[in-house]
Image (cartoon, rainbow, N blue to C red):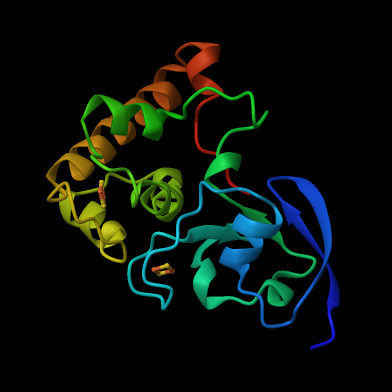
Length: 178
Ligand code: FES
Ligand code: FES
């Protein structure tokens, strides 16, 4: 099959390649761009492990062809903070760490990417809102309780930084709208 030229903005940097039109975005990210933080589980849109943001919206990269992402902005888990790859953990990543919200960690990048829009919401969020936001991602290890607890902790810290303007260091870790 004839290869196509694509340019995709990947974590803020333009990435050009000649690729087969049938190449999945998940394979493009992992094998072409070598960003292996995006995981591939089911490869048919069920588990959510491959979730990335395309133009700011979380999407399953195993259901998108790389050519469909041409000239669009793709953000992977590696690009969650500015200054990648020399970044510190985000508030949500720190909360996952503190609340033991992962065991094998295979599902974690997908959860982190799916949760980005929730972190930008400014209204009070209930446990049910968090469960709905998590409902498209599967985890075989944790039983989800600690993941919900981590999201609650992250939301609490984000609210604190927004309300009190607490330390510059923490302000830099706030989720950013893309
Ligand atoms: S690998 Fe894409 S949803 Fe499971
Ligand atoms: S931590 Fe193992 S699948 Fe979620």
